[in-house]
Image 1: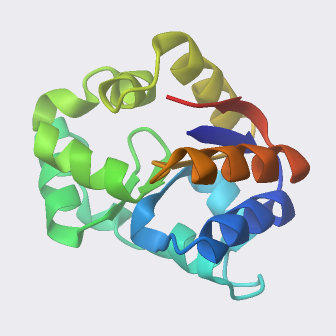
Image 2: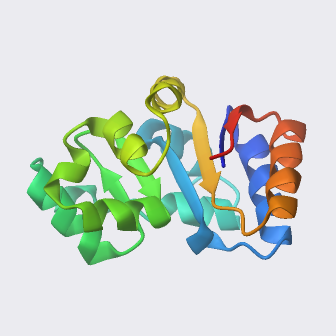
Image 3: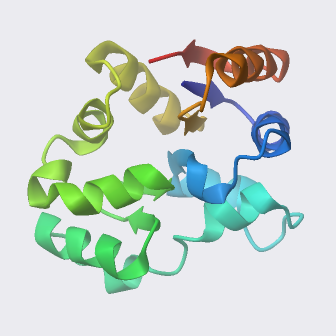
Length: 167
């Protein structure tokens, strides 16, 4: 399940809904542009769990080369979060780890290719790419059961989520 949020407050509330059901930082995928990360989760912003997650990949960009192979190596080296300076993205959570496992081919299609590879249909991936480029924050989670899925869908909508899809 995934959804897009236009501001930090909405994303924080949705993240807190996930957290209230026992989902932690390692269960949640978070995608945003580096510019969005700096705006909403930079040094001059309030400290929160979601902000910590957004910042996990910060500061590693200088260590990452521009080639897909170097990016994959850096993903593997830093664990579950990564800054992708060639794409201007921050990816945190299981998706970052999956990209590391996919090898260099995992990034050849850019963001859309990475999202499609993670099970998101191409038309939804393209919507998310456009949203991220326009300052959106995409959050995704794999619900453990139907009750959680329904709860998350309701909470995402209640918190101004857009493009909410279940897979």
